[in-house]
Amino acid sequence: MNIEYHYWHSPNLDRNMELKVYGLTGKPFIIFPTQGGRFFQAEDKGIMQVISDFINSGKIYIVAVDTVDYESWSNKNIHPYDRGLRYIQYENYILKEVIPFCSEKHGQNNIKAGTLGFSMGGYHAANFFFKHPDIFDGVIAISGFYDLRLLVGDYSDEQVYFNSPNRFLKNLTDPVILNQIRQGKVVICSGQGAWEEEMLESTLEMKSILEQKGIPAWIDIWGHDVNHDWPWWRKMLPYFLEKIDI
Image (tube, rainbow, N blue to C red; front, side, top):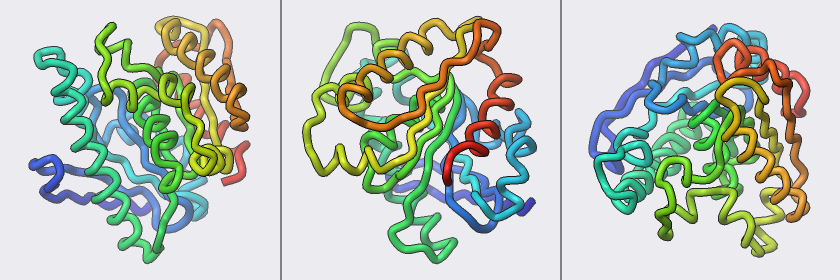
């Protein structure tokens, strides 16, 4: 497997940011780490190994990014408003730096990428896809949550609202945006085992919203033995990549 390491000083975040690219050709997927995880987490946890056939065959390539979770939504030492401001900067890093990096590296103009992740990485994956269906055309969100209430409690403002898919999707009526979302590949999955209670609740709420909006999606609920942990995630991701039409 071809693996490349890249870093640069992000003007949007005003700090150095690192990422790894796995593979050379195919459809790009941006993978987000779990809360506080690093860009090398997926490799360390064996994810790249279990999806190596998809990468080595040229079907997909993976861009593994860092997040700034503990500078944004997970930073309980600052006000949620300020957490949201930092997240906007992170959003701009992905949209204005990582996506152009992918386009330039592979000579693909107007590239459309998929997003994927587990736990809080699933939150990021879903949030980016549903907010920017003009840039992303697919999402595989596993064991994620889709409302920032889990991190900011009852506090709400514009940034919390527009970065909580289960909130903004309910009121989304723009036919152009809805049509773009409907054309994407949507996979949302949760188990029913240990530490999945809040994720399952959020996933079922997402299922109801997508059905109401007429958005095709594969909402897959796994068994009561399926815990919020890497051994299951290593089974889930290749299963979905095999089943969906990339």
